[in-house]
Structure formats: C-alpha cells, structure tokens
Amino acid sequence: MLTPQLLKAVFDRGMAYDRYVAGGTPDQRESWSRVYSRLALTPAQRVLVASFTRKMPVLVTSGLWCGDCSAQCPMLTRIAEANPCIELRFVDRDREKELAEHVRICGGLRVPTVVFMNEDFEFVALRGDKSLSRLRAIAVRQIGAACAVPWAETPPDEALATLADWVGDFEQTHLTLRLSPRLRERHAD
Image (cartoon, rainbow, N blue to C red; front, side, top):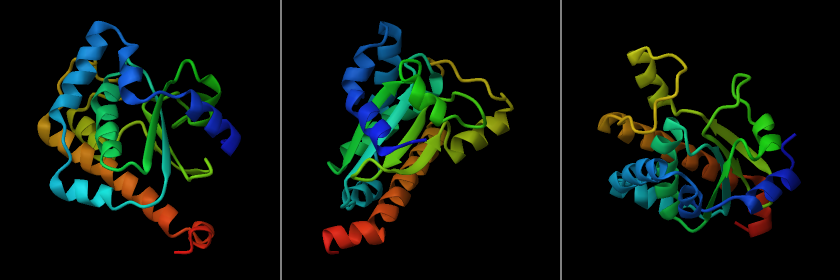
C-alpha cells in the first residue's frame, strides 16, 4: 500500500534532477542532457503550470539506463521548473524495490513511473511508463513493449505531444488538489 509514510520516506531519499543524472555514466549523462537542452514549455504551458497554487510532491521511479526515462524525465523537470509548488524527486527503481513493487504497471516493473501526491504525501495519481502520445507513436511503429535505447532520437512532434501529455497530467493533479474539499477547508479557499 502506498502510505504517506512510505511515500515521504522515499521522497526524502529522492534526488533533484541534476544530482540524479550526475550518477549516470558519461553516455547516460550526455543522453539525458541532450534531451533536456532541447526541451522548453510553450508560453501557454508555462503560464498554465505557473498558475498552480497547491504544493505537489512528485516522485519518479526511473533508471538512468532507460530510453523512455531519458526521453520523458527531462520533460517532467522542465514542468517542475515552471512552478516552485512542484517538488520533483527521482529515485532509481532498482534501489527502491518496495516502492517499485507498489507502482507496477500491467504487472511489470516499468519506468518511468510518476507518483503524484498532496502536501501530506498522500497518493493522488500514478502515471507512466509512457504518455498517451508516446504509446500511440510506438503503436504506429509497431515496436512492441521494447524500451527505446537511450541514444535513440525521439521525433520532435512526438516529443512535443508527449510533453503536452505530461503537462496535462500535472494540471489534472493540480485540479484534483485544488478542488479537494479537505484541502480547500485547510487553506480557506
């Protein structure tokens, strides 16, 4: 069970993006950095994310070796950079086995998986291991469940659509938090 105690403990062990990526091999660091440097939120996305008002801890289970992680985790970082209410942390799936077992997708230990929480580290939502746009693109290419290699380029239109999907996931979580009767009462809003 994803208890607030488990989520907070793992979150506290998690790392900010730069520190997490620094633990990779030179090839992994270069792959992640290349994707990060090419990404930017659109002005409309930046305004939307900047408007979020609720504290949103976000925990990502990942693998520096994973192509989907190197393609998508920099997107999550760019989103978090647009609003200090979003606290983003990364953990290695293989080092955080208890959490990984709780966030299996379709019975598998997938990465990346994203756990959205409220300010009390209560579970709100789980997303991963690919956004809807990314799943559609993979289905079109008929590559099955195989994870792309970290150095494989993601087509720009697919990357933009995937980034938009992730922005939508953050927005949905924010609206869930913003409309929570308990949190509205707590914050008198």
